[in-house]
Image 1 (cartoon, rainbow, N blue to C red):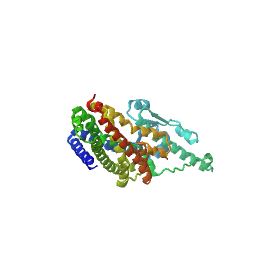
Image 2 (tube, rainbow, N blue to C red):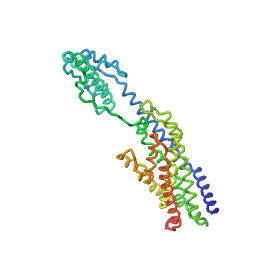
Image 3 (cartoon, rainbow, N blue to C red):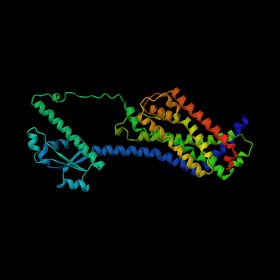
Image 4 (tube, rainbow, N blue to C red):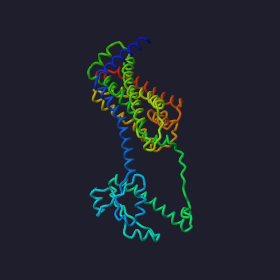
Length: 393
């Protein structure tokens, strides 16, 4: 037993050293892992900036003198600036010189004074999303002003405003702020799972298909070394790179979430080092299965390039749980823990939403991943005994 383990350690050291010397492996692993969290931060920043821009609108007004009370009320609202409108509103909007124009008809004041419905027009090109958002806020403010005036008119006539509201619906939302914020981080499970797919990918391919293409695998297998020791050493090297990538991504996510403008977006998220550590712990066993699966698939390829083509299809696996969970209830079924990747997705979502860490659920998902990894390793060791695989015959 000691000798196979010692030989496994030799292969492990050899593969790790080769991986550290290979700039291609390091760059292909580190660059995506650094870019993905930065892209997340950039997305949050863009969303926050857009919300801030949506709150601040400039309202060009044509015919402001016909509805001075309305215009004054709009000017008092937060983030609203009033300016004179163009003489030709439709042309100005079409040319893009203004996002939208509020047009007040000449008879607005007369109809308003008679307590009749007074209309205003908002000229906007709805194909321009930014203009439509600005016009939507102006429309909402004007409707709010209309409701305020309607209530005042009823009160002046001695009628309670509740008369025109025979039924009022009040929504009691049981969703917590943490759960609401978790929706904004729905990408996190896939991001972390993608990390382990990328981190050990190059080592898994190079140590199998790459060595086979270079002819070094044939010389290695000519030694009287148990196949499982060779496969285990190569696999553990791939796992080491995958785990290192996962740890790096966890640290980057923690730093980015601490600095992201979630609170400015109205989201409260309590994720600290403890929660990130729990999330990383959930994904660690899955890396065992992923790297073993990548090695098994790469072993079937005759060249490094061919192995890349085969293994690239495995990158679709993290997307499948996202599709399955789109139309499922919040409470996941027990059977989902027995499905690799899907079980980890559910556990990560629970931790993001602030749920307590469940050892039994974790043990089930981890055991399935470890069992799958053992099966893939035994399959790869069996493939290493095949002359057709090793020599390409």
